[in-house]
Image (cartoon, rainbow, N blue to C red; front, side, top):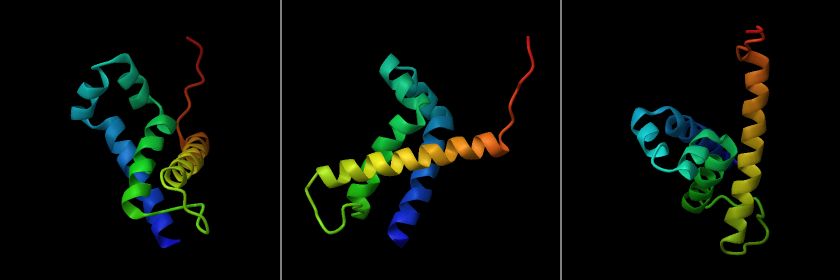
Length: 101
């Protein structure tokens, strides 16, 4: 459980850093697919959480382990949950510009 919570926090930090760091901005501009990856929390989150699941050995299918499948399922589920949490946080505490131009 502690590994999962640590993975959630570390992953979100890595996603934020990858999306906002100046050197990464140059990488995102190299190809349209990279640009899309850099702008999508869920897409980038999948790859970040996949790597973290492999490195930290976090498996949401705990009683069962199928190599690669367990990490993919973990990455998809965690990425989706964190993505929804970020959207909710932004809606609750973010600044919305509702002015008509």
